[in-house]
Image 1 (spheres, rainbow, N blue to C red):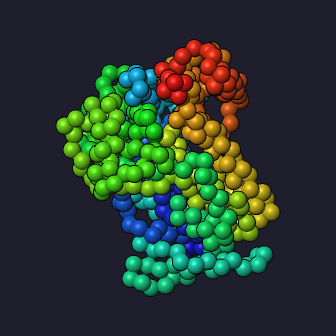
Image 2: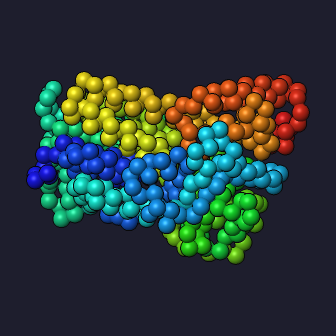
Length: 428
């Protein structure tokens, strides 16, 4: 492509979704420009990958590069602050056994690797370049996109198609006023990196740990170099009346969790402390004439089950396919774009059902003592491994698990059924 101002596709955002889409389009011979507002490497949260990520990494040609920067992750464990018990969910028990592990990576390194791969594949990848305005023409007309580079100079692009992978900036959804917030999952997160944290050994070596606290949950993610990523996610009640700096609030939260406190004894904070709101949202309209929103630019859910990067890269692949088809056949490409949004929405709904109920005492009890009748436990592990796009083998296991949850919840409200350790305070 001799003139980058008139590409086939402009990708807004150079995170996992944008880099995946840009690489795949370039590999198909399309002229692609990707613009990223920051410069890689940059700190980002979401370091835990899922087994379903590996297929995409292989198609991108970066599987071994990611392996080299990652910590082997064979599963996830859940730890109860209430009882001190731990329950392991090994990916090897998933219904789909084609991939039985993943890796945990420093996102700064992963994102830089994916961005560089898109450039290596032929995409024009610009950093420190922020999109400031966009104007769509009529049918068959190119959009006009303005951006500003690090020097303050204005750049103008006239792409045939736009993929919005701007992440939680939600560039198009915000401008179009189609972003619906989900107040049901109104949480906030605070996180940082530590050294000297107790790491799991033996069969749990490399596992991500989810510690279930009284009013939220912690993640503990082992990273290369002896670093542990620790974060706390809580609802509004978890933060009510809290005072002090983010670091003071974070350390106070850690001290309030007996299971996390024990692992952090003697550890050292080796990064800044970051905080963010985890308000779940989704765009009512995720595509239109000449554009498609992908990844967090379209929708976002709580990061509890490490679905962020996997969902973003999946959206990048689907978005690249829709854009590629649209360039030759706009009618068919538009249908594919609409199908992409529907498929991503269904995937978010599948995992959200669990996320929205994780603080429920009945759900916590089921998680800490999972039954594998009708393959319920293995069906849940299948979801934890990132199989969110529909798996016929998981229909009966997941439906059975939901039925057990609803029946147990009804019995619990009536004061019937067995006592559940996670439910005792609520029943009192």
